[in-house]
Image 1 (cartoon, one colour):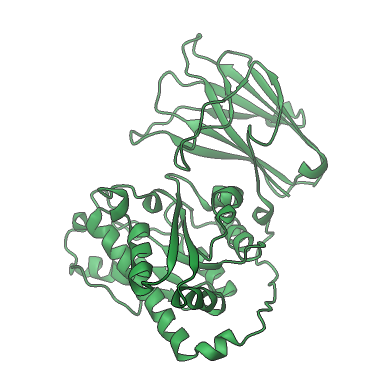
Image 2 (cartoon, one colour):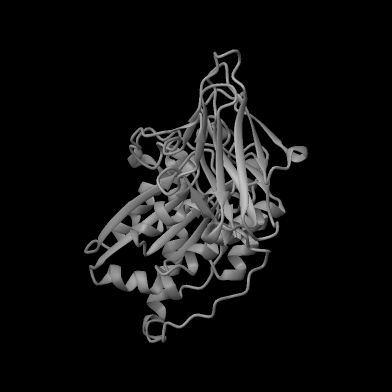
Amino acid sequence: MIAFDKTKAIANHGDITRLSKLFRKLEEGEKATICFLGGSITQGSLSSMPTTCYAYKTYEWFKETFKEADITYVNAGIGGTTSAFGAARCDRDVLAHNPDLVLVEFSVNDECNEYFYESYEGLIRKLLYSDVRPAVASLFNFFYQDGKTAERIHSKVARYYGIPAASMHGAIYEDILSGKIDDIQTLSPDGLHPNDTGHDLLSRVLANLFGSLYEEYKGKRDELLAGDGREKELPPLTVNSFESAKRIDGRVFEPELKGFVKDTSVQKDVTDCFKNGWLGSKQNDKIVFEFDGENECTGIAIQYDKTMKRPAPIASATVDGNEAEKTIIDAAFDETWGDLLDIKQLFLHGDKGPHKLEIEVIDDKNGKAVPFNLVSVIITK
């Protein structure tokens, strides 16, 4: 069993006020829901089965620690996705389950820049200040080969909002650099996605965090539970567009179809993520969105299937008829691990008001291309 630095593995201790409510419910054998929101690692990539994924093993830690409780497990991990998409989908994929705890993991898919600093804050705020008011915790993963991670910006958000956070970088990176862990393939065949041993380590790092927080709770249970429950909503650190992020797909919106057709295939589960959008198969097929009224916005992004299939189509996106700033979208994906649910931000922090979006297939590879799959549009307000 691979050891880790238990002190450095806790990136932020945080405020346990909300967790204390969960711990009380679990101690008293009540029902509780724990949800995991993240990318491919949360989904369970390279674990041998769903039950060896870190998320499920963390759920098992809670079940073992609170044997009388009735705990529901929700895994909302989708490979290749970021906190920008997390903010847009958490209403349906997470909050709809009325979770008591949400564990957020996006530190290897988010880049360490201002865009994802803002999107991560928006996601955290959307969870914290929703009507559900769950406890929120963070997991910071990293690339084992070079230490790359968005932990620096994510931890700023965690510290500001009092979010407990576990750090894999803090847990083991010094041991990788020193050679104490001499072969990262014992944890991950590709230097990122954990195998079963790596997922087990992740779950133990999280058990270290939650176990420490539970010990604190037990030490001052009466004080924590005697609080009046009122919380001060903090002002945002960023422009905070993503707290209002809204996902527009075929389930909630009817655009004008000029050749595109609605995808009516049935979505099996949250990982079956290329469904519910619109398909454009031929040159000049077009789809038009008019965002007005409750959908007036300050930003628009499109989400589409960036595919390994060949030949792949090319489309264009035009906002408010501005042909000079038309965005070209090549749907070809050059990786081999699968299709990517990609997001192209067309504009952000614009003037709030009605906006028109037109997407057109401009190259169907002489009629041989696979359809352009517009999975959704994400608006920010």
